[in-house]
Length: 118
Image (cartoon, rainbow, N blue to C red; front, side, top):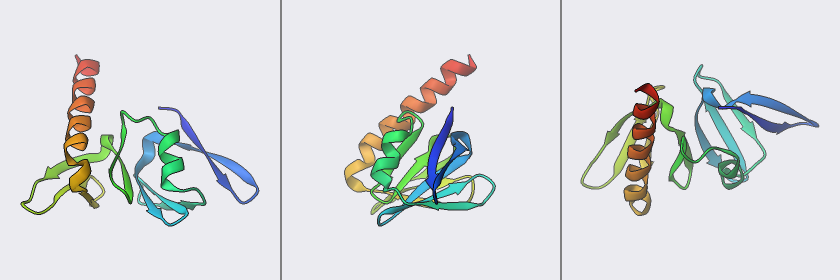
């Protein structure tokens, strides 16, 4: 994965995509959660960020979050709500509307990983 260029106060900064665990939407801002526990807020919407990320690795299970499938730890089905846990301890809900598409994307990602490892 390449780097992602993010806007800051008057300049742009490159961030390695492989370090992003998840992105969380906060109105017109996006909070990046990195693998070392740090967070970074940028003044771009989650929708704009989603268009800049590879869709085979970064998946949007809910309107408020985008997760990096490299950091997916587990999927937790429940009668009411499907959720996922990430390696950093975060738990993200999967919207009912997006659940079947999300599962399909996870399976496709796992198949890609197996093909690379083989």
